[in-house]
Structures are given as C-alpha cells and as structure tokens.
Length: 411
Image (cartoon, rainbow, N blue to C red; front, top):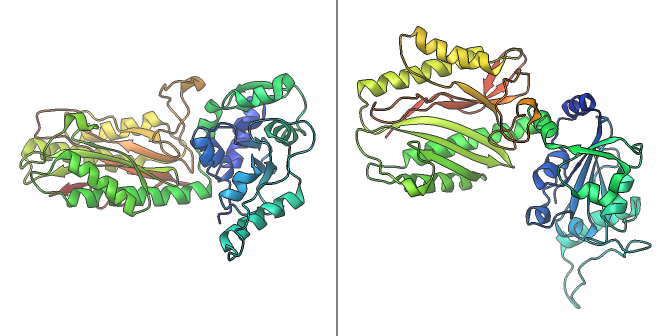
C-alpha cells in the first residue's frame, strides 16, 4: 500500500500561478499528475488518457485533488488519504463515458468460493470504501472535474497540459498552456523532491563508477552501457542513457583500448527524479595533452563549486568556469553550462516561456538543483574529457549531491 504525497513545491507554484493570473492547474500527463499528487497513474502512462487527472489550486493552502477511477484506486493498492492533508481524492465509476444520473456502483473482485481472504485485497478494498464513505463516487471525469473547480469563478484562467480538460468542461473557463508555468515551478524543489534527488544523484554516480570499474581493455562501449543499466537496476533506478566517448547510441560502437581516454555521461532516474554525472576514464597512462585537458576540466569544476549560490545567473557560472581555465594559462574551451535537473534531465523554463527549447539565462535561487557541464571542447588530445556533478543550491552556496572525490577514473 502506498500513501500518495504531493511532490510539487506549492509555495513556488502559487508564486508562478499568481503572477500569470492562473486560478488552477488541471493536469493530464502522467509525470505532471505524479508531481502534483505523488500518485503514478500507470494507466495514463499506458496510453489511457483521462483515467486520472490532477487539479492544483493557486492557493498553496488548498489541497491538490487527484481524480481517478474507483476501480483503479482499488486495483493499485492505494491508501486513503488524511482528510485534512495536502491531497484529496475524487473517485468516479464511469471511466470513459458519462451516463445520466447517479454513478454506477463501485466495482471489486469477487471472492472465490471456499477460498481464504486475501489481506492485500482486503486492505485496498477498505481504503477505497473509506474514501467512498467520505464522498460518494462521481458519475465520470466531467462531473468530478467540475466539482474540483466548483469554487473557481466562471471565466477564470485555468492552465491545462492538454486539450482534455477543456473538452470536458467547454468554455466555462479561459484556458492556457500549463507547461511553461510547470517548468518554472519545477525549478525550485520541495523538501520531498530534494530527498528524491539526493537518492537519484548518489545511485546514478555509484552505478556509473561501478560499471566503469568493471571494464577491462578490449571490452566494448556497448558492454559498458549494459553494465551501467545493470548497476542502475540493482540500485532501484531506471537507466536513461550512458554517453561514452561522445557516442550515445550503439550504432557507433567502440572498444576500450590502452592509451585512449574516454568520457562518460550517465543519466538515470529514481522515483522519476534524475541523476546526471560525467567523468573521464583513463585507460593506462594519459599523455600530456590529455593531462592538461583533465586539469582544465577540474579547474573549471572547482570554480563552479566556489561560484554557485543564490542571486547570480547561469551566465555568471559559465564565466567563472571559463575564466578559471584562462587564468590557469590554458587555451581551452568549455561550456561550464548549468541546467536544472529534476523530473527531466533538462528541467527548466525556456526563454520567454517558449514551447520549444530556448536556453534562458536564469537567476539562480535556493533549492534549485543544477548540473554544470565541464567537458573540454577540443580534439586530438588522446581521448574525450568530461566532468559533471549535481549541485543543490543552499542559502549561501551549494552542496554536491553525488560523491565528488574522484573527478577522474582510471582502469
């Protein structure tokens, strides 16, 4: 049984929504429902749009609302929630249709004659019946969503992440796209999100390092990727990708060989929150050009750690990394470029709230989690070089979320 806990930073959400004049989010995408309620809507992720929705009022003190079918609540072993907690659950009994009149009776599995009671089924049945005792089931998504928004005046602005809410409620409200606002909300993490990010960052870095150390000369990059997938799975995570030697896909395979270093950029998620970790792997003794590049990457990363704090912008971090390399006498290029990480590898608002990726020069604030890429952008140096860690922005600086004790790995 799992008690759903909203993950969204409601203080941040109220600030963003109020500035945009939005009265509520209405969310239908599975990752957005999860962010708003803590419930992973598996049926929505499977392509059954509308079997679950989430409503987040602008007022941070008003509970978020999960709308889901009564049978799905029962089938997926969800606990009832605290009546005075941060989440309410509205159940309906007519998924996919809107019959006239009262909601259909709740549905449960029938007991096998002469069998023994199943304790798990009895527990989830009890939690579902507890919710239905507090509030009878609705006769479909439309009536449940209408009730969830009943306190909002007609004509108010509602932000939705797809067309379904408007198709259910028509023109009772003014509608706008939610995604640009959600990206702004997700940049400032709640305490729950920070806890998940700590776990994700540590697991991801440990899986990457363990997979690299399991390799030997002659092994293939594909074998390294498969090892990363296995190490991630052992830690309860889900691999997203492992870029090796600037090669992300198996169509461009390679071999680990003496004398060539290669970069790894590892991304996986835990509880849908992402880790992002980059390192240089040396196979044998590196040459001087490679040593210089690795030193430059570390100088940039150290400058990043000293610079990151609230009140500066992404461009200040980039200037610090690049300036530190130049001050050390190296004529080398690196982006030293921050990006927000969370429910996505790149989880930040786009410039001017565009719907496609346009990099913005964001103001850095407390409780952001940033990755700062410090690869060395040159060739003919005996391999590829990268260094990347995850940083939590604190009140007056930053804190690494993964182990930074080993900036380079040698096999």
